[in-house]
Image (cartoon, rainbow, N blue to C red; front, side):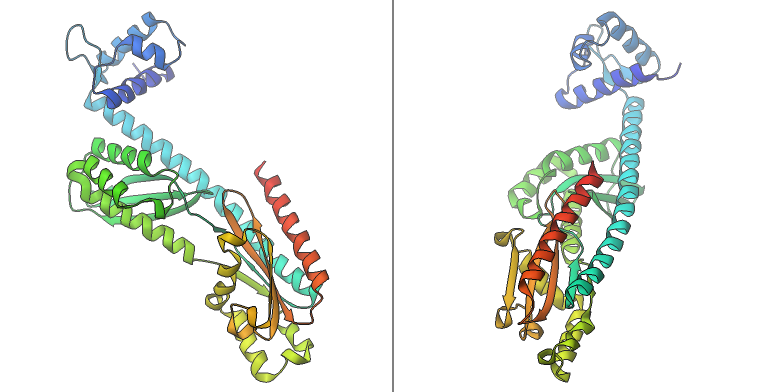
Length: 345
């Protein structure tokens, strides 16, 4: 006898109810769980088959059923298979989207530089507030765990960690449930000491594993915040303006446009929460970047939903055509927003 879809649904219902209550599960409870798709008699027959197949057991003559080790094994394998499939689908989608986005942003930086005759930069999208979507722990071998961390926007990070204690399949499943029920939707700042202490207490003997996982997740989120791609174009346009073509000034400005670390200062200023998605104009000494204090810099943030933002910047002389640059930036922001909203539909 094989497990068909109905048996699988009923088995999952028994396991989930038993995990929630710790009490044997009867056919009436299952009937409510499956929203009366099948009669109580049908459910009882299926439960009898599941018991005969060894997936559930009846602890007392008149009691409901509880999962057997075989039942737990089936459930854990199903959960891991579903999550692996979901993660693989998201990874494939995001690889396609990231590759496409990188190509779009590089072309856009080039077009902005050509259109304005100034230097242009565009940062790749970054998550304004990295929120956890879900965490999946999987066993690599007896001493290693794979941590799959999925952030808002379906950004995926994989980490392998060493564990120095034995964890059964059931305990691993419970750790996954514990982590996701407590952390989903939180930013790293919201995972405070009280949250950590409560989770370690709930994890019991595996409190150290929870601590280890949380440390790795925090590192992943911080690393993502620092891993910023910035695309530039039109750096040589600055030689068209005598006030910027002085050898030393030009050299410093060109060097700045080649170093992502320095440009991050500009992007971080533009991404400031209080400034939202409006356009910022820095004139001369107002610039947050020392090498750009003989220039004017105009930045704008584009949004792709779920708190995902990037920054567009134009760098030119103080006598730049502000009206044209502001109009161009507003047009680009609108086009980017429309393009990615259309893609998501």
